[in-house]
Length: 190
Image 1 (cartoon, rainbow, N blue to C red):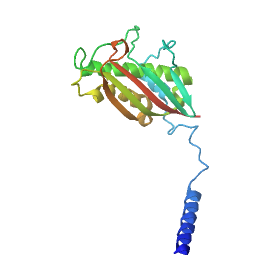
Image 2: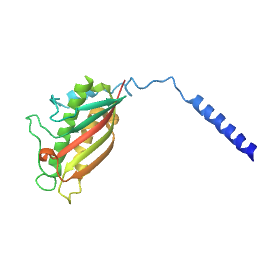
Image 3: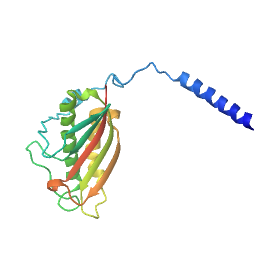
Image 4: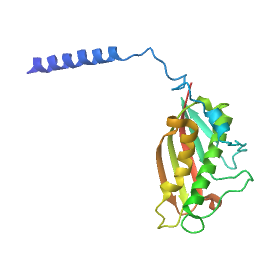
């Protein structure tokens, strides 16, 4: 019995070594875009999106924090070009369509943060995760339809690299009564 266990362990280790040798460790994909057509910078221009300065955070936080090749973006609201947030509660003073537009506005603000942090949106390897918070009445059920405004924009700009894991949740309130707040995690090229 004892020898059988040793034999099984030896076979397991040999198979693991063979599997490791079959992995191509020479190909480094961390510094080059997945496809030659990948150009978020050009896509933003073609969509007519104007990125804008996000200013200095109003509290004790930063717009983005980097850890390795991940960039964590702080929650942003739907501040428009005129400096005003889109405010209100979904299911009360705002429709799903207005919430969708507000979430898209947050997306433009987050793209602005990415551009300021990285200097070039082409350095974004992929959008990893999005956490969308919707200021909504308790019986509101269409949080995902609102946050789609953000997700759809990320896919428009980054293509398949913009598809991400996501949460879309309701909140009893958000700072300044803004309609949505969204944070995200982005993987970047080294």
